Image (cartoon, rainbow, N blue to C red; front, side):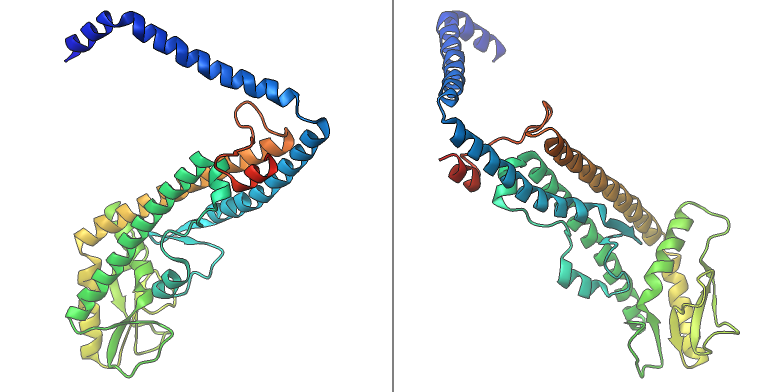
Length: 301
């Protein structure tokens, strides 16, 4: 195949060179013609166009600033990527219905026209965050299903129930820390799911895990219920598959958050550079996009 290509080039060398020169000449002519044409634009009209372009940039900058703000407020929360400015005690289902799993905002066609590469990067980050958060939610459902298979419901800690025993949904936080500590083979993990029981200064029907303060992880009215919850919690806490998977999720969420923060800083630097050295520097200049941006098309029509 390579020999055939080389032979073709050899046989058609002159036509290929001519075609290449015609292409280069045409490109230079178009660029030169555009520069010559700009010299004959009415100075007042050009001044007005420049003024409108600067206003146009400021409008785009507002959207870009919101994007940067969304990025820098992302944080890892026990393997889940959330907005740290939003209350972190709300239920996953409420959070997902309000904000979705991707978190980063959808972008306007105007922003996309001027920041095509950044738009593509935001789309990639949004997709990765959504994929990651789906994994995190699915793990919660698997654990909830494990408790359910033993007839132990997983209930919201703020909701009252007449059931004789159940596990609080807040158990995921200490579980994730425990799983991470087990995966690191820590000698003195906190919290410690080897020690689950009641507390002298706690609610007598609540179960607590050592090293997790005064927040209960389960409720049981009888000794039978307490033992049933303790054994179920112990088995799930010592599940090696969960330990490895949870640790991986935490490492991945931390990596994704750093990646998003770095992108936000880069975009912020571009905006500052354009504003300070209008219309920008060699690395990035804010230019008209008549073909892709409807606002530019109107300004320079």
